[in-house]
Length: 408
Image 1 (cartoon, rainbow, N blue to C red):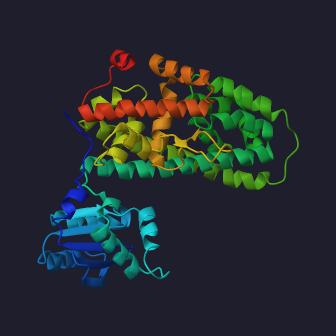
Image 2: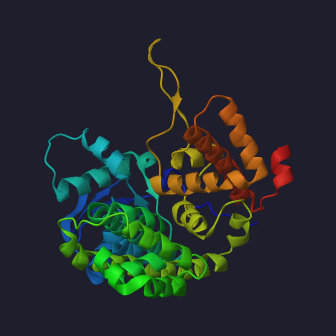
């Protein structure tokens, strides 16, 4: 049986800890404060982002007994301290930022310094172990997926920004042309067209034959139709709008940027697909309808190594659990949570929306719509239900079976 949930019980281990190290991580330097079980300071100093120095500090504190190493950021700038601590074989914990800020309000003073933050982290580790989250040794596949998915998200934003900018410029200089080109910018043919013939004048000079040839090269089926629509749109406007000359410089750059970004996304997706297909949970996760490569990757990066006792805990973590608002008789109702892991929530929401083609999912969605829920509410309810199924699949290591799920 394969499990995705993991993590050590920090509360159970807490009684065995002798030294609590709190580290406020930074880009070039960290600050560490170490306390013993009685609260006495054993260390209070700045640390460079350097493996040898980190090892030296950890080695000097292990002579006092068993150590718990707690950071305020386990990834990015905190990745090296966490990796060094894990390599040394000591327990590693993570104090979430919101919990840290609330705990900071319990301490005197309003100063915001690295030394104070490190002390608060160490004190929280010593006195409030329930506020900590575990940090597991990173799975190499999951670590690589996390980096690639983050880069893919950045590329997606860049592609959207470039596409919107292109449509905005086309709307400014030739609205009729934008109505033809804009809706098809997600196809490779249109950025290639704009990179070569960026303005109405350039398109007219090229002529119908050349434009059709270029479009058919990248879109064999739609190229002829799109060329006809482009020249029909050109005939709708004879005046030249101010700024068209500058657009002839900007549009080709934006078009090439959009094409390059989409090429980069395709390369990243190819690598992500290779990783998820090699993962032991690939067959299990993809057995659930509408779980594709990107959704599977996000489930692996956002759920692996975390501990969820029930499906409700997983749903709450994903921000899919409904929140009840009640205040006397004036405010009543259940609403979607605004908290939770937004990356996982978005992945599960989009997956639920795609799952509407599945008969069982569609039936559940239609039932929620019949109860008076709006479209988004019904999709979120479906995502929450699929979250329960996903939890059971991961807990038991079993693939999805539609008939058994419907019967349950």
